[in-house]
Length: 185
Image (cartoon, rainbow, N blue to C red; front, side, top):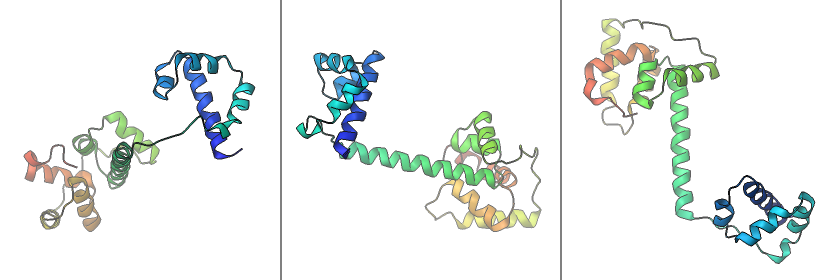
């Protein structure tokens, strides 16, 4: 079976299934008329296989909307990066309030990620860093002011440099920059 035959087979099976479920809009969007949809719907699986083998007639082609594909790839890239940040933050000790503020995650979302990552439940109240640690956190945070990175990346940077859990860094950052944090990750 060549790629055209394979593509035709899967598309015809898809059209048949959509029509059988009452979805005629999808086959219409693929360029099929009502009479063609009805004929495909009436075919058995064996007949659909036979029809797919006749793809040398070139009755099917696929075209991508390049702009829409670029947009979809960009959105997908953002989602992948966001998921990576969520995993890194939780692994670095981020708490529910951090995840809620930066990503809008609920407690159920956060619990699901924690379970997936095999992380223990939240620790409760975070420890308060010493004055020396607070100064170090401040210096590291301020050092990233000119960097084109978001709050999530800055939190991870401070955590990596200090080994202090993000759940302990976050309350300090909130106190220092409360009005500037909402929704910017």
